[in-house]
Length: 390
Ligand code: CAA
Image (cartoon, rainbow, N blue to C red):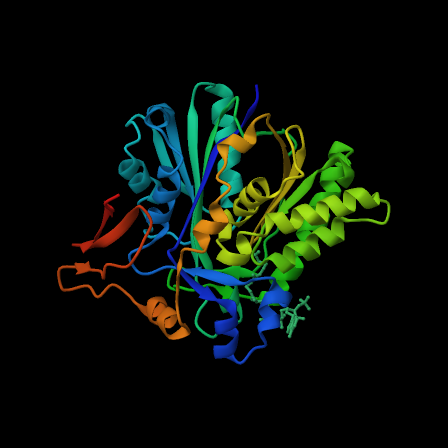
């Protein structure tokens, strides 16, 4: 049975911080960000946007009423959860009006979680061929004002509808995963921002890629020339480019190398303007590739490298399906240009804004711009979400 991604949607914040402005404010050369990290801008969220509003907006854009009747599982992957107990997917399920007899839960392993969610969705559909599973990767990456990771923040959600006979791509059963217990990036419950060993994390990313790729090649007797494109987790695009260059060997024919590097540029077009969206980053790269590359075609094999600090990594592949272009939104780069630019002072204000709870545990928020849904406030410690007027 063919199982894979039938629909894919994306949502990000309505506010954007230009990297040149950040460089200027932090006394860095603009080229450090534009060339050294390959980033042009970061999406910045106000207090009324969170992983639930982003996930719901991304899903709302792709789902029909029939999909909502067919979905029997909602998995939300995140490392920036809003509650230690209740799964964000329960809010998403309710806000979207998905039929009741569905399973909803949240899943975590840093930036790897969405890949685990897709695997679970694939297994579920393999035994329930009429089922559709909504997998949403939703995160707000916040490292801290003035921190080394500040330049690699971002926010966004990628929603993927997994089904049999998908219209975008089919998963191949070739996943190879690796776990290693390391402290490269982690966030204890008492901290709103992560602890990061930045350079160490980049080395672990690259070594996980190298060793997982070697095992993948060994198990599947495959070579880079079998792939039309490789999508790699994008904490910042330059790291993924370093990774791809490590996979490219002297034996790879020049035309394959040229194609892989050209498609790499397509895969980072969105992330360059959005920044790191943690577990959705790999899938934002996939979306960017599918919507901006005009050299890939139905039947092509795409490789994917997922990495989540801590650390779990996985390599797998998927094949494009005939007619996949009709399921995409080629105007997305124009949408990103409609975001409202923030000065560094405005960004810092948004960054530090916190719910000012009264003695009953209630707070209302300013009416910032959000996607189709927003967090209106908190009432007696309960988050209140509403749909914006269309
Ligand atoms: N012109 C061009 N390039 C310049 C430059 C200039 N004027 N100035 C600096 N650069 C280059 C540097 O040479 C460097 O490139 P290379 O690595 O190729 O040498 C690049 O810009 C960055 O410079 P630094 O290493 O000095 O930058 P930094 O101290 O700000 O740290 C970082 C970079 C460690 C990645 C930091 O941004 C960070 O900690 N980020 C968060 C952690 C992270 O993203 N890790 C990735 C792996 S973990 C993961 O993947 C999970 C996840 O999503 C969090």
